[in-house]
Image (cartoon, rainbow, N blue to C red; front, top):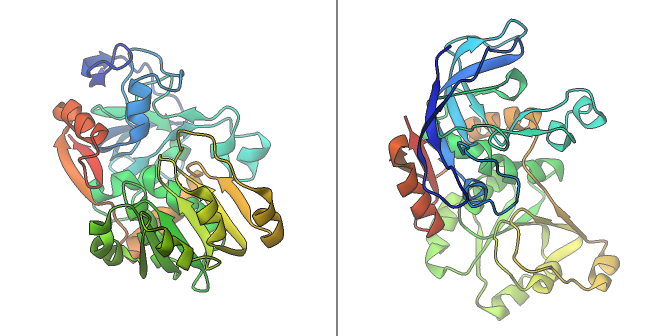
Length: 335
């Protein structure tokens, strides 16, 4: 059995070092994938630093994977050697709970993350359950598509589930790793799109990505001008904001969705929610069904991540730039 070679961290916050492991025998429901590209997500940094208390060392990070199937188990239907596939945050689920039965495998209590308690995609190969190896449309370039497998599905999923359409007015807070893809998907759904950012110099880029309007969030008057105007707001930032101002920007029955995690607890008055039937929610990644749909939409509407390429051997350099927010907007490792 060939060893899998990758880059692993051996302790919380430590640099990645060359590491190899024996994956054992290929299981009947698994595929082995030769990795060509793997995105660098902020979640990888949290796992390396053991911020969430769920990391097990040594481990190989990485969960925005694209590669080619080299071997398929005996019970794998519909996938073949030589086929290009993508793998996101999740690589398995129980397959029989109520959430799996209704196509929400990402909510399965036994959900298996791709790089938690096992080795991920900063490597030359990986094995996953076949249901979580998603065929990648030919129209998508692997480098630009890799970040869609986590970042892309995170913003696509709530837009899809909330029924965003050409009659919708959508706001996106933060024009970064998630936000720049959210603008593209919201525009692909036909919505009228408003970008919110503290960086005034991002206005032209935000408009090129699909925004019809741009609001500088350092300007309180500008935020007040959009009061009662939006049906959906996606918050992609991990920073504290003037949350009541954003709730005020929602129309009746509007929905505010947290995708990023602010450092402080969020305090919102109940009355604006009650009076306008407004809703606050959160959204994680998405199911295999959602990933199939998302990649198809991305291929047909030319949605792609803006990327900076690094050789896999230089993963530490990529992580360092991501930590310092110097990548615009997603780092991708290439084998």
